[in-house]
Image (cartoon, rainbow, N blue to C red):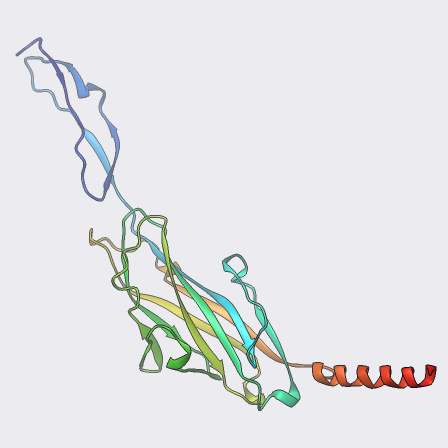
Length: 228
């Protein structure tokens, strides 16, 4: 009735966030119609992907690695020329999918494009990667819901193909594919749906580490004999 007090309340709308309301959201009933407006903003959906070298082993010995903070730096490994045909080098890459938006989502497929001179072996990997048209594809995260501010990680291990022809810079690409969310929204930033990790394998200059150890040992023996 005219003269009665009234007050309205906002509704919760999935995948929208409340922004503001008009000042007449409460007041006194009048004879004329009263229009109260509530404003909502569409939430953002954005999944991004990062990749970096998390470990490199040469003949089973770890050589150190990167982390997400220095992932854009070029990682370098030196191999002595004498070991170019025998060195067993395994590179482990960490792949992280992060929800930078406000709507939960899933990463249906992740596509890996490995450079020439690297090879994939299933026995080195804990998850399955399917070879498809010269690329590797996994759906390991398809059932993992990534909420706002959260991330999920997987790994891929590749081997360096022995030989001097495979020295040099190698760029490894990963692409976030078949992403989805319950709101059906488009990803607002496609530029962070791919990531590149660059690594250089070079021929080390000078003597090999083992050779140095042998020479030092011989010098020490000679000195000991001379002093004696």
